[in-house]
Image (cartoon, rainbow, N blue to C red; front, side, top):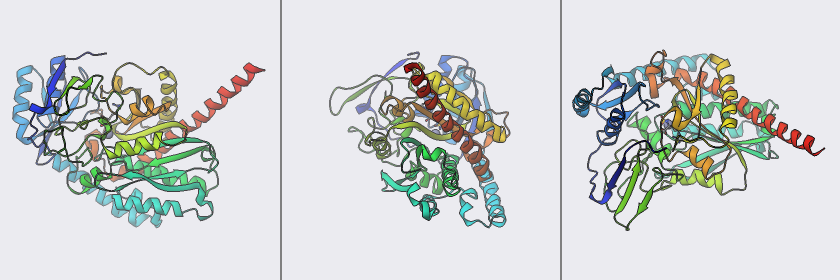
Length: 466
Ligand code: 0X9
Ligand code: ZN
């Protein structure tokens, strides 16, 4: 449903000289939009004033956390006052929060190294680097010499900076059904890749302990780090980096110094909303329906110069569509908020089979909750969070034709009453293990439910025949 205003952007006359990198000091504030005008103002902040929205939800009367670059903070607060939006400063020293999280992580690393003799558990002690992740995958593959055909490792292609995007397959070679999971589309969401690594380790334990019940039915493909360029940059340069690292200097004749595309806005299913047309090679007119994706290369949610423009996007798409595999499910892990969400993200209407998607999400999230009491909310992306087009989930369902598609937003919760909510993307590494544990249990229960419902379906088919 098109509820918002239509904006016409003529990009040739647009000069993207402003450089809204996440650097320098930032202030974290909370606002509560009360009118549609307020929502529009917040979108304007995001798009043009370098504001980085941290809250998943963008809806009326809901808390919204935004990180303001210091240089723009007073202008933004003034505009808020003018339009009647109350601003609460939650943290005026985000660098301090990053440091606090790092300090907890350092202590955790020392303690874990002391307490565990198992050198294969180093993925629980710290957020690994890209190089360490590659080594970890290799070690995992070599862990079961007699059962080596239960795993294989391959690259789905390279990134802009020429890093390989590694994938591991775990399952009995005779397994006929396939599951795909990825982590780390967004660079700063460190808890996502660590959760994929945790699950890889546990699935391989099952192979080694010779109880691969799920793995004799499914081959599970896990891509632990889909955006290694962005991740490396977030680990070494700017902790809050979200996008990939492709330059934007090819931009239809216009030039931008700003780097990176939000990969989760780049997938070509209803890319940038519904309407997109070109009137010549050099002058492109976008008619944008507000949909959480931006045409501004400096924005955190820049959708790219065209649908599927990025190599990371294309590589994932090739894996999904250019193979003879039938995929039963695709799960993509992000943070944060504790949401188990299904399509669509581009619009608020539901897929025809949403009841089935919702039921299975409930099974997974209930099992997850039983481990440490962590609750997840369930719903469609556009309804539970906000409309945003170009997500890998929408593409996997809309183009890839995968039935069970989910984005799982891991811990912490975005409820400010939650004790850990303030860590947001900076969850210390003490959380690697509990988040991994509960997610693994939730995912496994979800997978079991796929097996049971297929069995029930074929049973009822047979009963019907007889
Ligand atoms: O906005 C996103 O890309 C995801 N949230 S995050 O904070 N991890 O960036 C949510 C994506 C939900 N799916 C779609 N909108 N298609
Ligand atoms: Zn994300």
